Amino acid sequence: MQHEAPATGSEEALEVWIDQDLCTGDGICAQYAPEVFELDIDGLAYVKSADDELLQEAGATTPVPLPLLQDVVDSAKECPGDCIHVRRVRDRVEVYGPDAE
Image 1 (cartoon, one colour):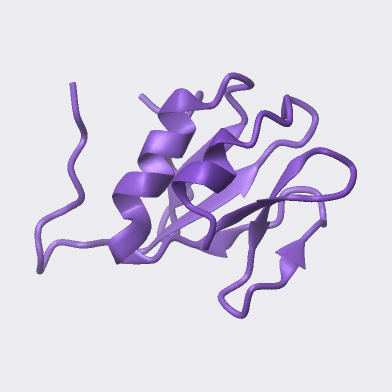
Image 2 (image 1 turned 135 degrees about the vertical axis):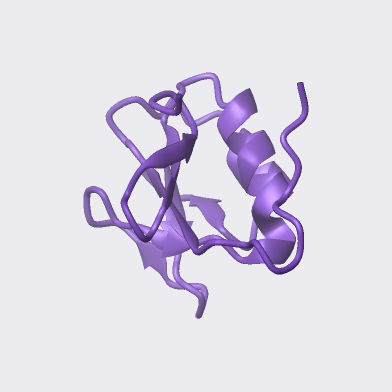
C-alpha cells in the first residue's frame, strides 16, 4: 500500500531521524533523498540540516521538506536496518518507520 504525501492544506510539520545503532550503511536513504540523508566516513547514515550540515548528534532530527516527503517515506520503508523514523513535530508521534502504527 502506497502512502501518499498529505494533500495541500492538510500538511503537517514532520521531522526525521536515524538510529545509527541500527544503521547498516547500505545508503538506500541517501539514494532516495540525498537532500535529507548522507553517509559519513564512519559508513553510517545521518540526517542533514536545511543548510546541508551533517547532524551527527544521537537522535538529531531535521524537518522533512514537503516536496521530499515521498522520498523520505520510501527511504524509511526500504531501509534494511529499519532505522529511519519520521514523526509529527506537534506530538512526536511516529507516522512512518519501525515504530509507526
